[in-house]
Image (cartoon, rainbow, N blue to C red; front, side, top):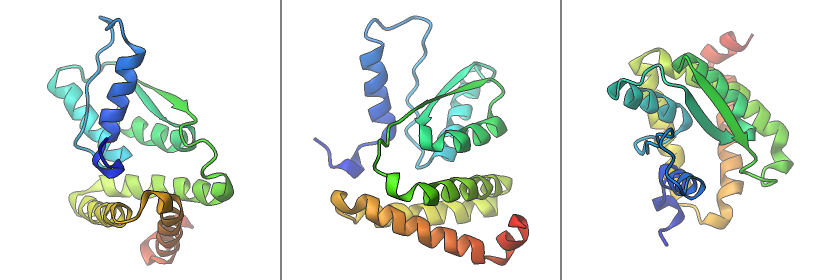
Length: 171
């Protein structure tokens, strides 16, 4: 088995869909988008794939964790014309103790992702921050991921709220 950080979400989701769709439905097109490091990148890159295949107006089913469904739906509405969010409780109860923190992270995350999408300079800042977060997580033992991820969120929320640009935007 690959180390956890060597597996990709795209590979895991393709395995899931291949198991679900064992008869290989003719009406179901499954495309593995494996370049993305985040939800917003996944949505943008998926749109590019659809446009390249001339399926730009195709109905898109977006699978996500229930915790993130509002953020995913908000971002998807900026990218796709015809989509459906299919949410599942993937995370289980692992974030139960920090539910309020997650709600705040998701609320501010929407603003941050929309800001990142506005121009290339914002996108570069977003990518730099994302890569740093992933570097930290990849150097963390799997049994400490949740703890470290929560600390990353707390730090990011604090920095976000203290940033003069965001103070103005949030008021």
